[in-house]
Length: 258
Image (cartoon, rainbow, N blue to C red; front, side, top):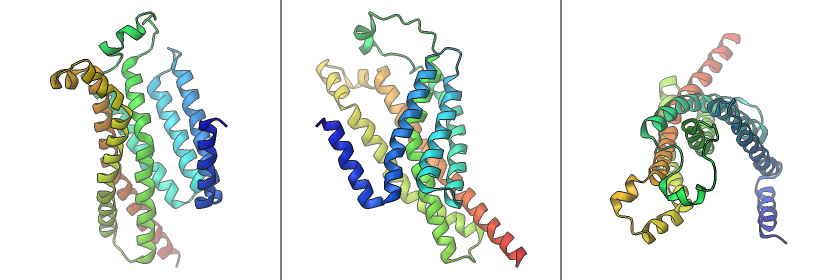
C-alpha cells in the first residue's frame, strides 16, 4: 500500500475515533479545501483574473467549509466567520502593500539555474501572487484563533450571563493572549521546518549571515511569518469585540421580549 494512502487511512481512523461524525466531516473538509485551492491556483494562471480577488473568494469558501461544514451553523461559527473575514480584508490590503514595497515577489537568484530554460513572460502579477501566498498560509491559523475565542467567550457568558460587555471583552482578550504566543511559535517552527533544507543549502554555499538575511528567498519567508503573526494578533481583539457585542446584544433582545 502506498505510504500516503496508509497515512490517510490512519488519520481517518483516528479522526473518527476521537471526533465521531464531526471527525468524518473534518477529514472530508481536507479534500474540499484542497479542491478549492486547486481551482484557485488554476484560475490564477489566467492574466485576466485578479489573484487578490480570487484569494478573497477562496478564503471565504475555505472559512465556510472549515467553520460551517465541520461545526455546523450556530452563533459561535457565525461570529468566528465574521471575525475571520474582517481580518482577511485588512491583511489583504496590508500584505499587498508590504509585498510591493519590500520587492520580495518573484524568484530569487538561487532559482535562476532551475528556471533558466523557461520563459518568464507569463503575464502574472507576482506582487499579488506573493500576497496571495501569504494569506493562504495564514488562513488556517486565523480561523483557529477565531473559533477558539468564540467558543470560550460563549461558554463564559452562558455560565455568567450577567457579565458586562467590557468584562466580556476583557475575558476574550485574556483568552487571546494565551493563544497568541503558542500559535505564533507554531507558525514560526512550521515555516522553519519546511525550509530547513534551504538553510542547509545556504550553509553549503558558504553564505554569510548578511547574505542569508538579505536574500530574497529568506526575506520572503520571514515576511510571511511576520504577516501571519500580525494576522493572529489582529484577530484577537476583533473576535473578542464581535463576540462581546453579539452576546450582549442577544441578552438585551431576550430581556426586551420578557
